[in-house]
Length: 176
Image (cartoon, rainbow, N blue to C red; front, side):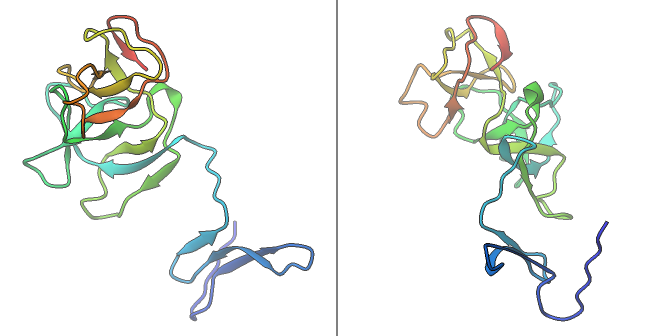
């Protein structure tokens, strides 16, 4: 363990490389701000933010699609209608793929219980009753709580597209 204390105004830590050791490659300022040239995340595959998700009749679990809660600002609800433009993200952690980077602010509205993927690679629960889902198909919210479906009405999907399927779901419900 290393404990760094700086009661002054300078940096807590600096890292240098290069043949002369003069190339600054990372820096931790006294206020906690950290700068690096490249940050490689190897523990997960998405960028998530913590949200509180309203519990309904459906158990909230990884891979579920969530939308903005119109009644509770800053909070989310499990999706439940097709082509919902209030789509916010997918709860991270399904299929064994964990969050790679977590954003949030302790003791604020940005400190919820669920990691919601805003971008990156996640597994999502899906319903193929709207048609078989093939790799590359665009996905949107469905009538099944927390599940995605294949986009078939491209006009309605504007602003309601989750992303693209990376695997196949021929029928029924499952995880993509």
